[in-house]
Length: 99
Image 1 (spheres, rainbow, N blue to C red):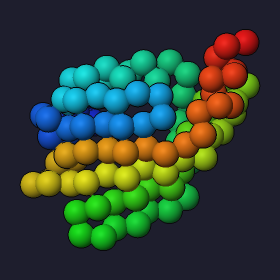
Image 2 (cartoon, helix red, strand yellow):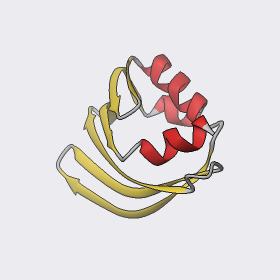
Image 3 (cartoon, helix red, strand yellow):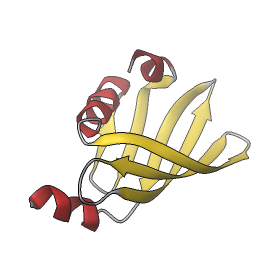
């Protein structure tokens, strides 16, 4: 988590299907919570356009949902991640967590 925190702008904003955060510490806290059910991420593609980066990946969980296809859109300012927007269908994960 320290390595990830070092890449973030202090005021980083995150928006995803399961919530949103403002600030690097809140973002790291959210990632830490997600780490309880995630075993990894299988990266498929990275697309860079100036300060915008899109990463297409499967978020691999240890739930019945298994691997969840995701797209993450990151904007970098002054060498740090300023905001993150993640897109995925949360229904399989929510169903797995409810059972």
